Image 1 (cartoon, rainbow, N blue to C red):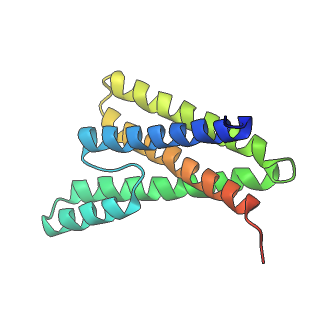
Image 2 (cartoon, one colour):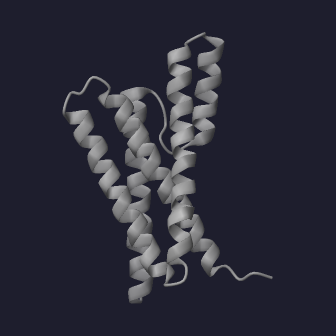
Length: 145
């Protein structure tokens, strides 16, 4: 039988994988861009440059910049929380991630003029925060030699 910490880790891993998969699948279907993969967006941006599709280039680069901004934001949030506990940090980041994804979904469902663009930006920010948050927590538990 799994210990309660192993069960929490398992459910957390499944939840993070689901959110990342949802974000990338939804954004690729809706906007032909990824919200959580910098490499994929760089390839798609290069293809768009070769095709002289500058609007697509802007979309892919905005997803990259927003994803990287999310990583930076999670580091900024993590610094003051480091004094308390990493257990407080990850739920904070995940709560913010849920709020961003809900806002993104509402913007998309509302039929706004730029709903797809807003969806991509908010989900990219959420997945960047998730990426930075998980990396921060992993580094907090890694022994430094």
